[in-house]
Amino acid sequence: MAMLAYGVFATHDAVIKSLGANYAVFQIIFFSVLFAFVPVMVMLLVDRSEANLRPHHPWLVVVRTFTMMTSMVCAFYAFSVLPLAETYALLFATPLMITALSVPLLGETVRLRRWIAVFVGLIGVLVILRPGYSDFSLGHAAALTAATASAFSGIIVRKIGSEERSAVLILFPMLANILFMAMLLPWVYVPMPLTDLGLMASVGLLSMVAQLCVIGAFRAAPAAMVAPFQYSQIIWAVPFGFFLFGDVPDLWVAAGTSIIIGSGLFVVWRENRAEVSDTAPVSSTRNARPDAGPMPRPREKDHVLP
Image 1 (spheres, rainbow, N blue to C red):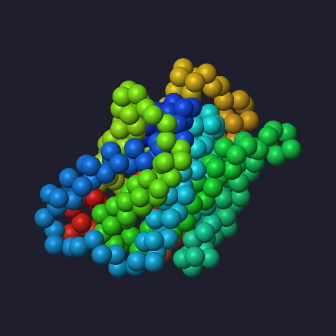
Image 2: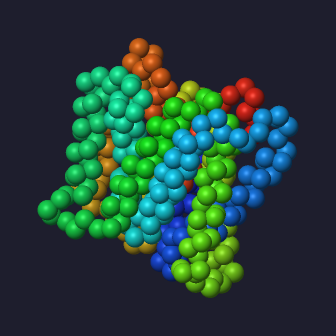
């Protein structure tokens, strides 16, 4: 289910890249989130739990909503202007950033080996960017901003995820995206043929299908087993990029990606050892994707969107 989830996410990202050639990011996000909002509302309407949608930590929910919006806008832009494999490589730095930020923001203890893994992962990012030898584009800045904002979002989930309903953490960013993008839409809107509107609808629906598959995977297996499968997106990115967009990742991107994935896998492995971390590890944030957002640990009474 994890392989299926991230394969669907990769397809979702390829559609974004295709649409990004003709439409502004704000327009793509507005329509894709609008269509994704429909199944979410259906799931909420059939929810029989008595809990309401009032957040227990309103300010942290607001901050997370802002970081989610920032991450989504930047990631969608990066997908539209950079090769898929290169964008993924930079977004894969998110778990490493969560590890680094967990020390000052959550007071977690990160020992030497994980700090080394974070440092090695940073080297992988530098290998991809090659400062001084290749141009640092706005797309690269957007991908790194998306990874950073997603990391902050993950930190907040680690702090409040056990107390807030998943519906709250998913619904608030969706509503904010729809409202904010609607305000920007008059300045960027381009008339769409029905086929492109269908593609934007598919972005939202694919995101929902992939999230449900991720939830199913985490229900069926331990986090340490499922979390590394997020890196399988690179397997889809290379053929999608080559056959659909003519992108061929160079050796530097391949080397940097390998370094980042290796570092991320080591962090996931270390943080899932019982004696290493006293709080929720990186892998328990469930999903480092900026558009889906890290998913909190399911609770007994949280049946709809665990």
